[in-house]
Image (cartoon, rainbow, N blue to C red; front, top):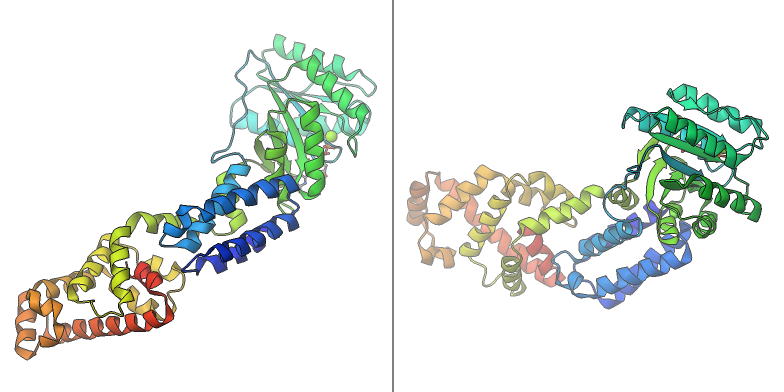
Length: 443
Ligand code: GDP
Ligand code: MG
């Protein structure tokens, strides 16, 4: 599925220390495949990947200390954008009451079920007085289904008999609602199993008759490519104000969620997550994007790191690391410790940080606040010459440093040993060409 595919692309990108035009092309190609396999509509795939590529090749990824993660952030942002922006879009019912909501879509897409859910949602959460009316007058079972749902969720159903004229019933229901001070009228419509002219004509006439505050298109998330086609047909026939994406609880490949917004221009306002009347949720594009990438925590983690790290200092440190640790002295070591200290409380983050591998325990130990403070105290008790040339620190200097910082001589030994280890580690890193990555981890 889309989530799995994008997640594996993301996993690999996350570890990338360097992003080149080549691996961007390659990764964008993988993103495109993932979208196509998830049944995202072709024009949406195209604009999605174009935008990702443009931004990835632009300055923001190359300049980033964490290019792999910067790339993932771009994909995440783009997912949010195609789904209509950060927040859930509410129903707009601020009209002279009763506000009418017309619900259209194919047969079996979940219109009637969604009306039951919306009725409950509006009654319970928004304290609205709700009337429902079935204009699916061809099947007695459809009228009954809505009546049953209405009584389940405690709202009134306007009485309709099979064979009644849909437009006339809709108008009568609205009239009833006006006279009895209802806030909202939900109008159910007949759908066919495929798009056809007769159905479209009828729903267009109904739209004219009721002049709705909201015209919602209901689409089954499981229908993949067909969802895009249906959305296009309904979007051309009706001035849609929103979409309800149903059956999002099934193992849909996820494409519909990405396609319908761009194709209809209308935001997904709700998603259905089951058959029960409470299985309805406002659609939050940002949360859905995180779910699709499967790594909401990683994205917020990236942002956290980006905020904490002083990028300029990291770059200077990186330059020293590139020299193979030669210029790296206790002053730098102290600066590093201070940075870590400032980040505070980030011990748990270390484990989540990509590629930390063999140094995890060591770095984690250094993240501990009191330990870092003690190390800083020791370095502060050294003379400038001792800091730049640690090899001159003999036994008597060690005793002086220990006394000055309130620690034992063995603590000073440990600090110096650790400093040497770090120098050595940097030389290794230089060989592997991962200086930038290490710099970013150490900061
Ligand atoms: P309509 O023909 O558009 O009115 O569709 P219905 O409301 O009658 O729903 C068709 C079928 O889909 C019913 O069996 C519903 O229980 C089921 N259904 C509707 N919405 C959802 C949903 O969000 N999740 C699941 N799992 N089933 C749903
Ligand atoms: Mg129905």
